Structure formats: structure tokens, C-alpha cells
View 1 (spheres, rainbow, N blue to C red):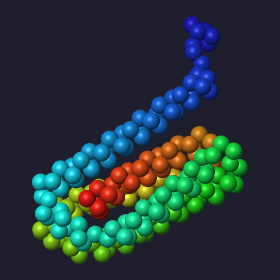
View 2: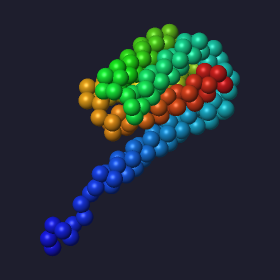
View 3: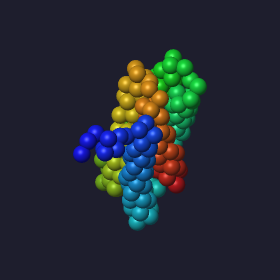
View 4: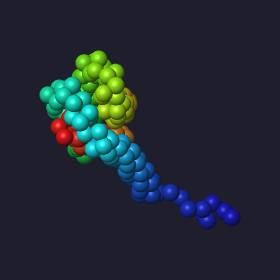
Length: 185
């Protein structure tokens, strides 16, 4: 066999592969968070009284502010992903998205510090175990994503920008679903 008999990957093939991997990652993230949230809801139905009592110790206003912070971060990510954005505009928007992501983390840690005192109460054990698992898993995604946003801002190639901004929007979407289920239901 000579070199002509081997298929050569074209740029279009590589774009399709990258897109496929991106969507596999997106759907796996959505499935993982979906399983966690369904588990949270099922236990919430089984232990409705304890969950209702535990929710009184959460701060929905602070979580609402954090929602606005994360959505602002997502807006910055969307600005970075615009096809006509210049290199500097992409960099600024990616750094802005990361900084708002870190602001989300700081507010969430402040919220956790207020909740830590009641989390040890055996009456609220199931709620806070699941609460910290679900919101903590999301928080780890925000921290990791914010660092990746900064890395991509250093060398904002369009493919990398599209990848991280899509994943960043998935993190936003998860929070938008999580916020009412955890804080308001």
C-alpha cells in the first residue's frame, strides 16, 4: 500500500470530530447533573419535611445574586465567541467571563460558610449532604472552567473559544435548572 491509499483527514473531517467530541462531553455533563438533580428531588419528596426545614437555612437572595453573576459571565463568554470579535475583544471577554466565574466561586464559598453551622444537624443531614454534593460538583466545574477560560484567553484560537464557551454555557444552564430546584421548590 502506498501513501495515496490511506485517507487523509481534511479540515472538515477534523471539525466534525471536534464537534462530535464537544457534544459527547456536553451531553455527558448534562446526564451527570441530571442524575444528581433527580436524586436530590427524589430524596426531597421522601423527606419533604426535613428538606423544607433545611431550606429555611439557605439564602436564596445570595444564590439569586450568584445567578446574575454567572449569567453575566456567560454573556462575556458569548461576546468572546462572536465570529467577528477581534483578538483583543476575545481575550477581554474570556478574562471577564473567568473573573465573573471566580466571583461566583467567592460568593458560593461565603454562602457555604453560613450554611456549614447547620449542616451538621442530624435533622438536616440528607438535605445538606445532597446540597453540598450537587452544588459542590457544579462549583468544581465553575472553578475548572474559569481556569480554562483564562488559558484560552492567552491563545484564543476560534476552535478553543467555541469549545470552552459552549461548555461554559452548559455550566450556566445547569445552574439555571439547579437554582429553583434547590433554593425555591
